[in-house]
Length: 159
Length: 125
Ligand SMILES: [Zn+2]
Ligand SMILES: [Zn+2]
Image 1 (cartoon, chains in turn red, cyan):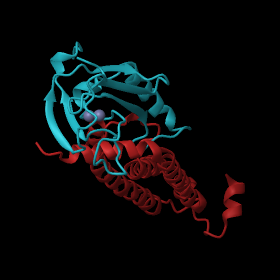
Image 2 (cartoon, protein in one colour):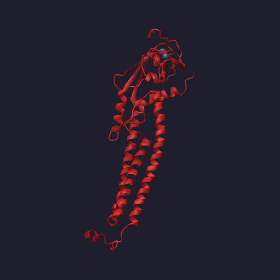
Image 3 (cartoon, chains in turn red, orange):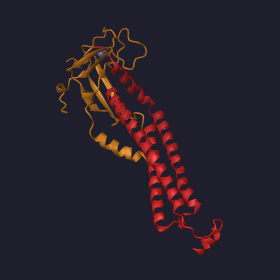
Image 4 (cartoon, protein in one colour):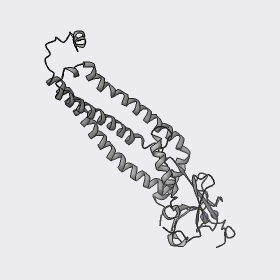
C-alpha cells in the first residue's frame, strides 16, 4: 500500500493545532461583521414606519402589512445569519484534531455549507418579497382620509 | 511485545502504509483533559510511538453569545470520548531520528503508518 491522502490529512490536523487561534479570530471577525450587518435590516422597519402611513391603512390592510413585514424581517435576519454560518462556520465547534476526524469534519462541513448557502438564498429572496408585498399592501390599501399628505401634523393632532 | 527494547534504530525512514495491524495500542485521556493520547509499539521500527491528538477548533470556535450553542454541543460530545484507535490512521512517532529522515517531518519516527485492528485492543465499539 502506498501512503495516500491519509498522511496529508494527518499533517493538516497537526498544523491546525497551531493555527487555531488565527482561525478563531478570523471567524469571530466574520461573525462580528455579519451581526453588524443585521442591524441594517432594522432600516426595513424604519422605512415603513418612517412613511408614517400604517395608521392610514384599513384595519385588514394594516394587519396584513404588519404580518408581511414581520415575516420579511425574520426571513432576512435568518438569511443573513445562515449566510454568515455558511461563510464562517459554527462558533465554538471543536473536534479531535486527528487526520481522519478532520477529514470527516471537512466533508460534512463542505456539504453543510453548500446547503446553507441555498437556504440563505431562499430566505433572503423570500424576505425581500415579503417586504415588497408589505409595501405594496401599504400603498394599495391606504385609505383616502381626505387630509393632504403634507398635513401630517394635523393628522397626528386629530388622532 | 517488547516496548522500546526492540527498537530498530537502524530502520530507514520511509513513508509506507502497513495496513491494518494488530498492535498493543492503547488510548488514554491526555493530562489536560482536552486531548487523547494513543500509545503503543510502532509496527515499523518497534519503537514506542506516542501520538497526542488534541481537541481544537477545526476552523471554528469562539466564545461569546453565539458560542453558547456550540459549547453546549461540545460538552455533549466531550462526554463520550470517541475511540480514535478505531478511526484514526496512526503514524510512527517514536521520536527517533531514523536514517534518511527529512529535516522537516510532521511525525518524527520511521515513516510508517497503519491502522489498529479493532478487535485487538480490548475496546468495544
Ligand atoms: Zn516506527
Ligand atoms: Zn523508531
